[in-house]
Image (cartoon, rainbow, N blue to C red; front, side, top):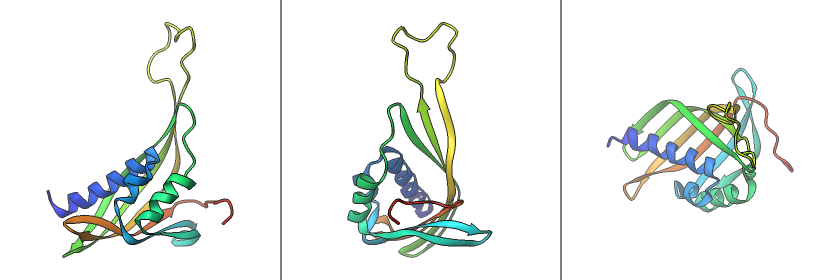
Length: 162
């Protein structure tokens, strides 16, 4: 598998861990000294920082497990990434990719079952976030790990207490 494909797979694992709220799996994708910072768009090409950076693999695991809201009953999140721009320079790499996050809400199954007229997916899917992931990686013991991850949100964002 090419380095570019391996790097793209790191992002695929990252978004799946986010969707599952799986801090351990997400933290394993980062180096011990990695940084994660969220930015909110304030103008056509300008961003402001949101909150404090998260530091290290253990910090990422803790943040996912303790600060991400759990999905409601019948709910989940679903990330889509696209247009991955990847540059590899020896043991270092840079990736930039677009993302959209969808909120998925299944309708509850009625106690008496769904009516005969029910057809297709039962629930709603709606986009709730979009932006870019701007990520630096380093090869560590043969595996690509994230060393700096910047989440560039397309809209303002509020974090309680920030």
